[in-house]
Image 1 (cartoon, helix red, strand yellow):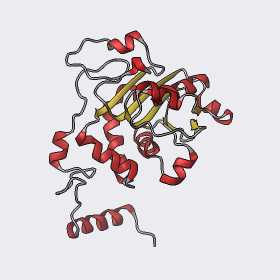
Image 2 (image 1 turned 30 degrees about the vertical axis):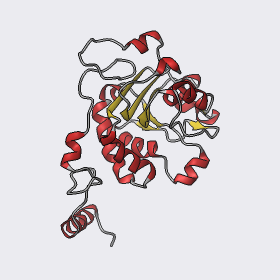
Image 3 (image 1 turned 120 degrees about the vertical axis):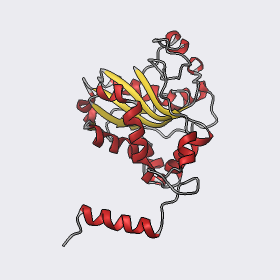
Length: 247
């Protein structure tokens, strides 16, 4: 007879007693693999943010930031769960490069809270895609690992291959805003066979980190070219300020 969920839960509980879960930063882990100290240091974006790109405001001004007013992004709105800094960087990079896919459900829960207004307005969730060559070497797409449980917990449709990266791009790391934009220009598309999944839909795009927004903009343009009526973006973390005017 195949073990049921209760049996597996009891087995996991017994193993936790014998081998207590360790946080990725050392010590005892709370839910999701972070210690209490790490949780307390993460800068969650609970306060007012720009209605467009999601940059945090010191005070609620009920508007968009100067960058969004001067040059509206291709996506309609973006939200991040936390700031990308020395504390949040470690678990994000563990997911991205160290096979810690067990961290993805935790990040999905963060987004289910931080991006709730965008989730409520969305029809479906799509991850930022990797090029097939990159996917082969990494074996998984970190954005998809976050998007899949988020779709399951919110009841939204999940579109894992509605958006593809049609050409390999260099890493965005170390590039300027304009360099990032050039690097991903024309890199994304909705395959004709997937266009019906996107046309007339409100899509919530999922990624791990937003730096300048170049990748999100490239994806948003491709989705809207295929008929999406709205494209919002939800990321685990974002830099404090994006130099979008330079891209």
